[in-house]
Amino acid sequence: MDGLLNAIMVGGVAYLAFAIAMFAGGVLVAYLIIKNAVRDGMIQAIKRTGLDSAGGSTFIHGYPPPQ
Image (cartoon, rainbow, N blue to C red; front, side, top):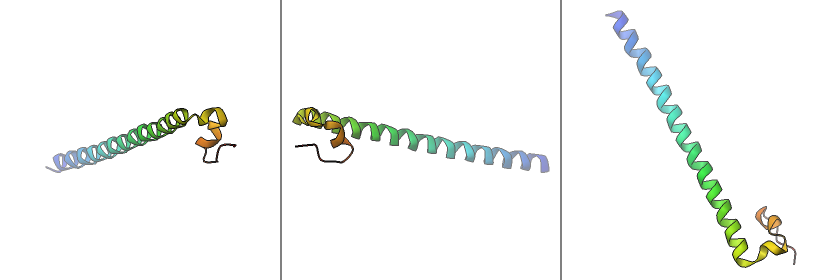
């Protein structure tokens, strides 16, 4: 009976670790997708307003574009 209990506990711990790793991986992937979508959206908005010709790269980094 002891061996069975140990096997259940080891299995439970392994499953928990796997579940946490899956959750963390999902969060990381979602973060990267959102980050890229935000950056692409900013680039598209800058191209649409025509600011890219006036130093759009500085605008992306949070500085006002040169006048």
